[in-house]
Image (spheres, rainbow, N blue to C red):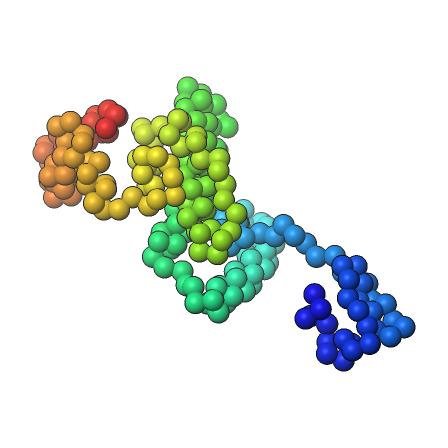
Length: 225
C-alpha cells in the first residue's frame, strides 16, 4: 500500500492496514473489495445481458448500460493481460462461444420446462447438464488470467440428455479439455456401424440416402461409445 501513497506524503509519516499518516494528518484507507468478478464471470454475464437486451426490449436501455460497464471492465482485464504478454487465443474464443451458446440454450430450455408436460423432467436434467458444460467453458476461459474455477461440473456426465444434442464438447470426462478434431474422429469411429465415412456422407447425401443415414446417426448416437 505504501507504494500507492504519493511521494510527498511518505517522508514524515507512516502506513498501516487502516490509515496513512503524514505529519499531524491521519488519512483513513478506504476498504477494498476482495471478491470481484473475474474475466469468465464478466463474459458469462455479458452473454446473458446481451440476450436480455434483445428479448426484453422494454428494459433494453438498462441492459445496454450494464453491458457498457461490463465491456469497460473486460477491456481493463485484457489490457492487464497484454501487459503481461498474454492474449486470448482460439481456445479462449471457442470457450466464449460455448458460454454464449449454453446460456442461450438454458434460457430457451427453462422456458419450455416451465410449461410442464411430459418433457418437464427431462428438460430439467438437460438444464443441469448443459450448465455443467457452461461452467467447464468458464473454467477454460479462467485459465488465461488465473481466475476462479467452478468445480460443479459432475452433472455433465450424469445427466446429459443426448436426444437434445451432442453437448460433449469438452470430452467424455467433462473436464476443461476441448475435444480436438482427432479426438472427435476417434470417438465417432467407436460407434458401432457408424464410422467417420458414414458421418461425412451426411453432408453430401440427399433424398432416401440422407434419410437412411440420418436415421442411423440418431439411432447410433444413443448407444454408449
